[in-house]
Length: 128
Length: 497
Image (cartoon, rainbow over all chains, first blue to last red; front, side, top):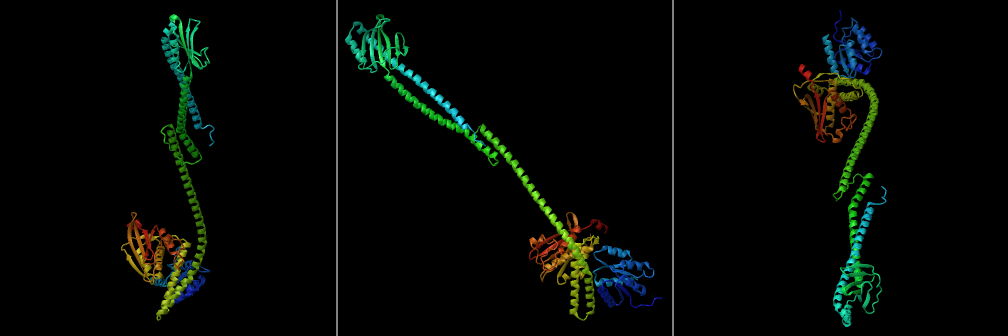
């Protein structure tokens, strides 16, 4: 039995510290629990250790990129239920394609409007 | 051309003058010769008549030997001043002198052999000498009496002299007239030839503007007309050649220019490529920090609920970041052409989306009027790019406005060249565009504003052209501009929908 959580926990993976941190602040402000990670490996550790409800994943990261993280999580039966939103670049359509191919549920094109992301988070979490 | 040795003028003059002199000379000598004879014969006849009347008068006195009467008659006869001597002779062959009368003091140079004998009827004979002539005639053949009168040639010579004088005068008059005639004739014949020769020589030297004009109406004129025709043809063909040369030159110039332009374009493109890579790199790197700033601004806004002034600053921050992001996306569009991702799009929805979103920060203080036609057919296009294009037109319009400016954006369906087209007009009442600038506004990096890098319209045009659309611009300085975007409607798409 899983313990009942009041707050949904979101894992933010982005190598850009300011983005990671401010996204964390914004999401906390919206009432979510947030953990942040600066690279793929660190992010995966959080994913395996803690009960995560949603992963926000940047494509370009050191050590292990967004696709790899996405594939690992989606190929693992224990974790494939966790929805993943990928942050992709506008000018690289291939990123979107490979993001969805790797199993991401949604993608957001950078630069994005904060409201857009928040709306999407609500949608994804409600679906679950 | 060499000078001719014997000109036609010289030849014709020489021939005709010689002929003339010969003819006139011949006529004059003929007149002189026969005139002399006629004069002599006239005189001779007169003396024959004198002799006959003398013979009749003297006959009775000779037979009667009346010397007194004879003397009287002789004296009377000598009144005719030419008469020098009168003989009365008798006998058949050996004539004996009966009586001789001599004029006083007159010496007879010749009595002997005559130069010429003329016979006038029976028993009348004239012996013509050099200075004197004698008339012999019978007084009475029965008695063997003969009469001889000798007269001098003084009168004859005078008459002949007068005749010669007149004839020579006539000769010179005729010769003079003739020579004038020769000159006129020569001119008449030779002048046209000379003229033709001169013109031909000039044409030969290359002056094709010559034309021979003659007032005659003969073979020479025919020749000159044919020559003129020939020169005309020559001139025409030369003109054609010159024109061809000229056009060739122009073509060469054009080609050279094209080549130069192509070369410059290549260099420009190379520069642009390097610049593009650089710009793309920089822009890309700027994206994430800008994204971060935007998020921070958003976060701060949420934290500053009780401070409207700071909220406004945070908003400004968002707008500025949006503007920066827009510039970056224009640069990236230019430096890294992306493939279009086509889908069916509704232009009205796109316009609404642009106007409602916070992205077009430049429209914040601008009044925008919408006149959107309902039920607009959908077009096929890359939504992001169409948005980028229309935003750029709006940005351009907004930047041209002064404080009280407004923008009208309208959409409607039009039939153009038998094709259904969606037309979007972006109209402003701003500063307008001068005619000179109008040609350049779509060139990349062309800008008349202090701000902006001049990529907006260039990107917009590129986007619209990629969608097989067209852009029309009308602009008046100080009155404003209208940019019309024409996008073709996909009929198949419409049928399906």
